[in-house]
Image (tube, rainbow over all chains, first blue to last red; front, top):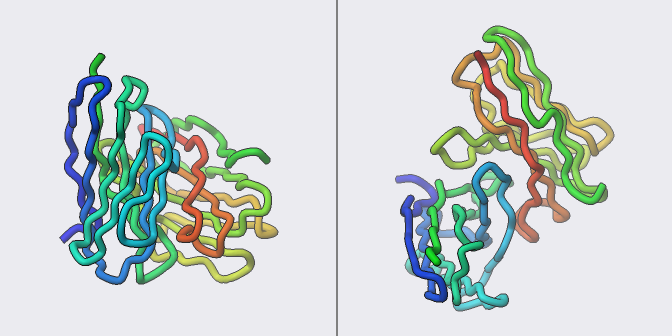
Length: 111
Length: 116
């Protein structure tokens, strides 16, 4: 089982809609969770972090964490074409000091 | 500096040659990571440095790969006898915390390595 799993997509949503991106992880004791956005040809950019069960909101972004289900999600409200990118989920590894990344979900927001 | 700086941005090398990739982290960031990202693949952890402690080399794929960090700041990733499968984008990241867990990473713009 891969440590961090994401659907590769592409996930296509119309402009103004809510985009929902999901991630599951295998290490039950993971404590730190991050969402990165990566535009084509660019490096990943941190957009959200979450450490506790529940929701965390930052502008149009909401991160949701459910440790019992080993599930973390990212909601993007009022999606814009500029949100079109690959979204990477990252989870801390309990065996070291590195973050484990999923392969990312490609999001396409259509005008 | 203002961000994580990596050089060169692109490198084309012949199979069998050695290459050096450089990373200059954000000033004050003590944690430094190297990852690589191959086409269609996720980010693969290579090595982690924290201050003057011994690095975590557990992600290095073979003994052709090595890295050092001088003075707790600039890091160099060296790939000896490059192979075509080494072609990837090599990303350096730094973090303010002891690990990347408290604040996440800030990535550099990467070095695109092509082995021909």
